Image (cartoon, rainbow, N blue to C red; front, side):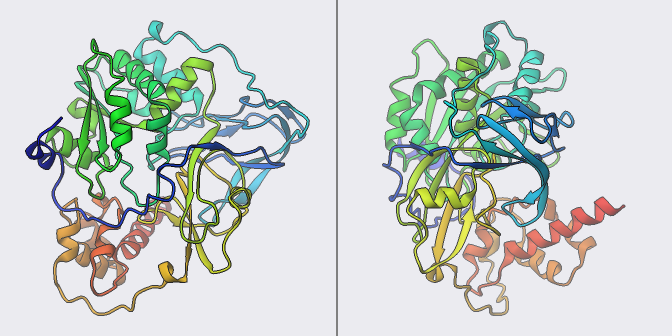
Length: 446
């Protein structure tokens, strides 16, 4: 076991310690969500270009069948989560409120819903270039929140040598426990995913970074690591945002990724543990990415749960399966409470980035009274990227977009540590997020 001094070093500067609220679901075994009648599959569920539909209205589709192909290199395939019929292709409500092109599928209620896919290739015979092509077709994206198509990370620049493969099992967002459960319930699959990627990347070492508040996951993986593999479990101090890629790299390797560089440029590849399990599942059975593990929790939920949910399932159906919302529920979030977004409509679907559905009452959603900034510096002390959040918020409010760019606003990952720490109740991260959105819009118009 690591010493206390080692554990102290396995952290990063700044950050915060919000209450975890994981107790309601941390010990709940994962259940499979029953199939429902209707599924909405947005074509843009990842960073990069949206997928392009390869089916048409009225067409019959099978569970696991390709329904949309990548629209560019930074794009991912989309597959049908059920056997049924394509009811329509058109604009549908996205969880955040905007309308996006989507494929609507009506499930065949009499189908067995068995997976009907081709035999996957033997991963041992693949080159790294082959892996990039194969993974793009599986539809797997980064499942830690960013939703970058997984294959993009494996497309290395010439001359890059990967030293470290990191499996990110921090799951530092309060309430969320789906990564925790996958490590406890499917450690063999996770280690198989690590072995596949470790071998094909030619990595020197693979590290599984897990926060200390998941002792059962640490134990389950530690005792299954093969003695002949350069794999190790690294327990981490509990701190938010420990799961941020740059923070975890700092905690595990004491390496800082300079501005403008990617982790791969430094010989490091990181994947979320759920991403690695999805990769292992594909090479085991040929199953593309069609199911999402979701934590359903919060004070407004009758029966909290960790669920395997087919992509495209309306949020309303997931909540119904969990007993529905309590009467005093005021807001439903998709994702965690720190970085998640309010759901505009319960008819919006579960998508690839949907790590959680959280329901909150008036007590949790009441916005604190806002006071003027007192220049206390707590937001600066909390920011893991050493930015000046209060300054960014002032510039955002004044719509000083040129100055806010010069103040490195693009380095902000919107973790919310600043807002959490502010004694004046200023919605700092919301102001920054709005400014970044405006800047992206300006780039798109030029």
